[in-house]
Length: 119
Image (tube, rainbow, N blue to C red; front, side, top):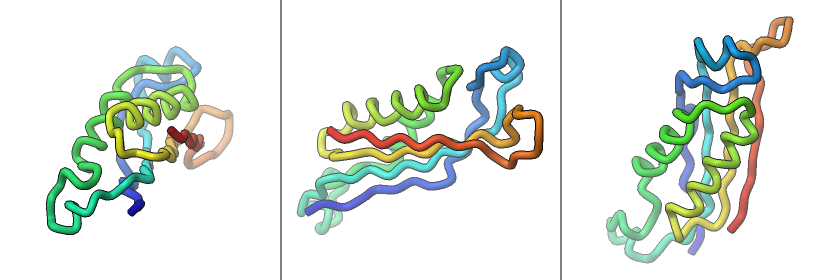
């Protein structure tokens, strides 16, 4: 059986951006992650081994968000790849990363990128 494990609204202070001041002072980011996965029947007997542990999933996102990068596309690609390699039962991953108040010369609540990867 397949299903999805989803974490929404993960917040991080991280150092992603093209401009040096973004990489030195950082910014607030929000990450949503959805993992399509094979759910083993043991999950229906309350066994965590039958699904993706969302605490471990959070740790993967947190670890990758801590690595400064110029582009959110790269960060999303790296998160998706790490999820696919860390969870053999994962079929596909969808990541959305938003940067709050991006430096675009005007009012913008957040700028976002969305990445989808399949095994």
